[in-house]
Length: 274
Image (cartoon, rainbow, N blue to C red; front, side, top):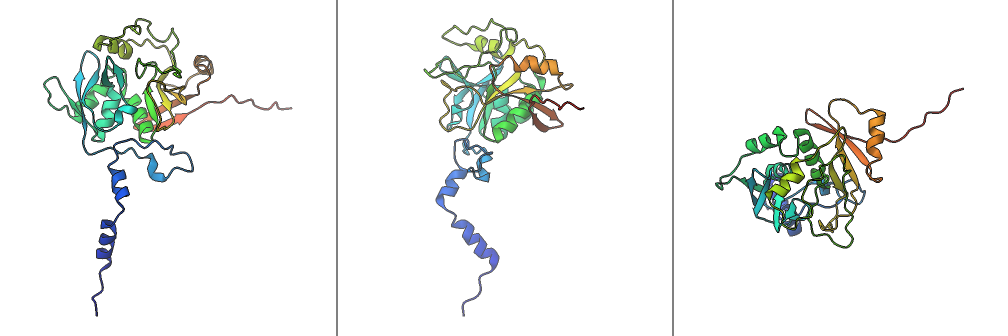
């Protein structure tokens, strides 16, 4: 009589015979572009998965960004801005990708910059992104959304169907060198550091997960994200902000001790009492 096979051994054998496609999905180099809020999307589709091989980027202090020197996979399709034929990652993108092992950040001596120093760059708020904004960015990206900095074009090569979102002139400095064909570090600095913002304003433009997304023709964002800081905005402030962005929905983000909450406001009319 054959000896009974222990349950633990049977389970181990079942796991070893997992479909090849499942293993390939874990090692998929692309972000999962299915909308996690749609019924048709499987629960695992909200995860962002990367290859084991990381891209490399070199930090450029005067730009407040990192120039990609070795790109792996297809992360560049939905992250980074292209200027003068080069791909740059903003500091929030660096933090997000480095946390997941998809990016190695180098200094000017090609030595690795650790997560602690990356966090210091983000928390310092000197490169166009605060720590709270990073938490909001990371949360949205983890859900599969495509997220870019508001007012900063992905690329200067636009397709015929491009619908850009221009910031109001009273919210962003007009000295941004947008007409220059070749973008240097100083041009990127203008985009990322010379933003003069009064009151509430968008930090990010957000698109639904889309496997056909193109930086050259991104279309109109699904919504814009505004960070709420010290106190809730007044009704006047909300109405002023809502009227400036051509009907694009605004969502407000509040970060409290790492907990990220998103809010939206609709006009509500109370019934008249007798």
